[in-house]
Image 1 (cartoon, rainbow, N blue to C red):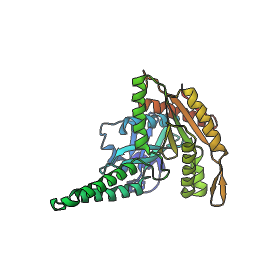
Image 2: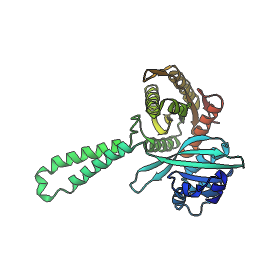
Image 3: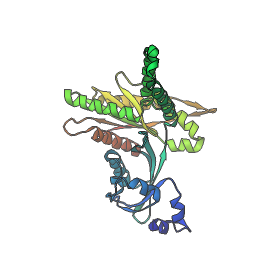
Image 4: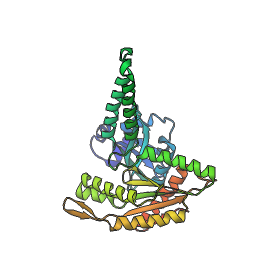
Amino acid sequence: MKPLADLITANDIEEMLGHIHAMIALVENNGVLVSWNPAFEAYKDKSPEAKKLQDCFPESEGAKIHEKLNAKRRDQFVVELGPDEDEKTIFCDCTFIPLADERQLFIAERFDTDKSVHEIIQRLNRRVSMFQVESESAKKIASNKQKEVDAVVAQVDELSNVDALTFLPNRRMVVRKLQDEVLRAQRYNTPFSISVVDVDFFKKVNDAFGHLVGDEVLRHIAYQLRDHIRHPDVVGRYGGEEFLILLPSTSATEAADQAARLCKWVREAEVPVNRHILKVTISIGVAQLQPSADTWDALLNRADSAMYEAKKKGRDRWVVAE
């Protein structure tokens, strides 16, 4: 941790970093780890042989970190760390800060977007357990109890797959559907496209109006996307301010037409919040499955890269991946 102390040149910096819950690591521009704090050390213990930052994370997330690292710019993005001991998916809000000495500072802070849902699920699971340990003496009411158990289990399953803020399919569910659609398209040789949608300048909204207003903006975008896609397209919240749209039996050209319409609808809509009228825009990256070359995560990475290309070109637009 000494290089971090030398970097910031502040008194007692090592002690300070030791008490920070966020994961902090100093890396070379190619991702080679130089130094890190105890919070990152605790996570790195899962990958003791890893020499580079991107190798400490799941493969699909490592590719995203590698891309962000190569961009060499300050940028916020979300990384999934995987399930914790309670089988609850962990997400981190991540940032790269480029430094003058050709190094970068990586900061990752865990956040929980589904805390309320998780609490409900735990409570419902306790009810399931209570019903399932009923003694033999309750056989006379077993039929009714079983119906209650089935209803509770169905409710648990639904809640575990729904984003608590937008009520869209959450990351777990939409990725599962993405995997299924890729397999179906490959099996039947049908076209399949996806769109990655990101809210433009979302951090500025949070900074200017607060996170409650930011949540209202995300709900507004979610409703616009949900109401303006066709059946059987699926839209889910992928994480943070990113959404993922699945378009079965759809070419990249058709998906681009939809992206153009979505940009227009969002641009022209108004978000009334606390006597303010906000106008927001979105950037969209479109990619069509290449059956002989793409896996589901490769397809997702191509769409994500196209979305960032749309942002580079000025935002409020779409780009189709090569």
